[in-house]
Amino acid sequence: MYQLNRIYWGILAGALGIVIGFFALGMAWSATNGDSISYFIKDIAGRSLLYRDSILTVCTLFNIGIFYLALRKEMWEFCRGIMMIILASVPIIIWFQMQAGIA
Image (tube, rainbow, N blue to C red; front, side, top):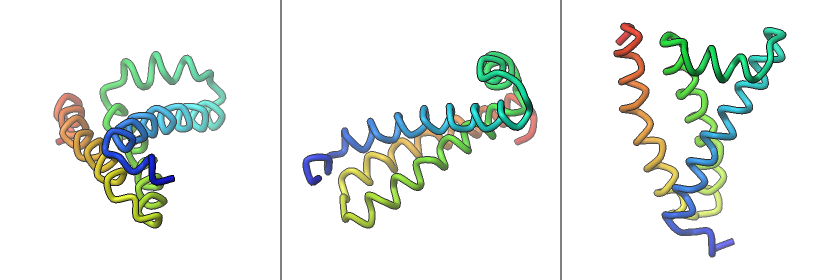
């Protein structure tokens, strides 16, 4: 377990967490609205300026759970890597909000 306690594993887990969060959100959204996941990816995430910041926020929140589990295991370096991904996503979320005109 402590072999994973490296910053680069935390960065990789954070990036993977965003991807998993995106597909989990896409599947939930598709099931709720009766559309396909490809519609969510192409039209909602790709073309809609209004939803991009919210999608990235939810995807980033997925990493909070990973961060919490690693924190409970006292994997400080791993947590540092995840925190780097979380903090790097904040300016992107703000940029998406500015593009949509809601910031």
